[in-house]
Image 1 (cartoon, rainbow over the protein chains, first blue to last red):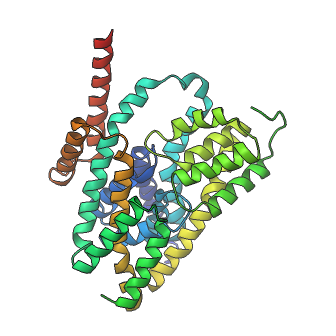
Image 2: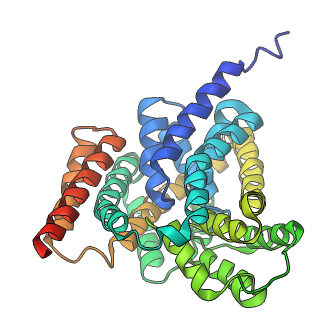
Image 3: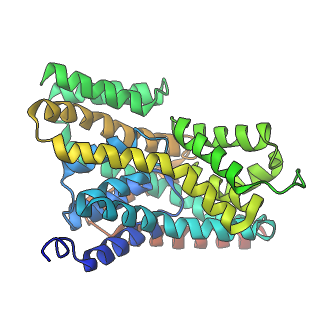
Length: 181
Length: 185
């Protein structure tokens, strides 16, 4: 009996609802999921530590999928394989339904420019949220000159030279392994 | 639609599994790959139809999941959309599950700990680079810069819920669009 009570059904309901909420905010896709998930899972619910959040983000970047597969990682940490699947389903559900609706009505929606204009004003907000999240994550992560150097080199590599993130992550992991700073 | 013949669910699945497996690089690189397969190679959609559909899917940045749903839906309706999006995400989900399993099992080993500590600064750079790419073309004058600063203050110091911040911004955007429209009339 103990085996079955290990992860109660109710915790899957909670996981589903939490990731559904994240999915509702993240409908446009992309990196907005980072500040939203960091706030929800690290700051408020303490499901993940800051370091686990960083590691999960790194894992998500090793796949061709969107950064939102971070939900798969978080769900797995919380409740194993089933948790991973529930979290993944829930986070993609709202945006996918919206996109289905748009695909269905796209002939009629072609001219909705007001919506586009309103959503455009959200862009600086998302940029601000990303800067805030990187500060919150970075203040405990970048604490010595070594780490500051890796940070600056990565930033240049990503923005200026468009290096693949997966490559940078693997390179930094190997560097950490060998230098043991 | 260009081709009159019904595209089989199996071929939709195959194409999106392929894209979901080889499509490293994220964002725009994957959208380009989807276009390459579905428009150029398979001629499932016209170039115009594809770019119109994608415009909706990438309101807040290029998003391959939405592009998959759109293409699948145009080809075979709801079933097509589901097949496309599940096929596209499947390889990534499998990779994450395997890596997370290994991570939870082995991350206490000291040498792996130092490898993971090396990753931290890269992830922070990744988030800032995403912010830069998003804002680069759109933030050209004082107003968006002010909005960025206000957002940072609201988020870090007032610890306002992100939904609340987005709601205020959307409301402001709506009022602004209405104001400009009424002034131009």
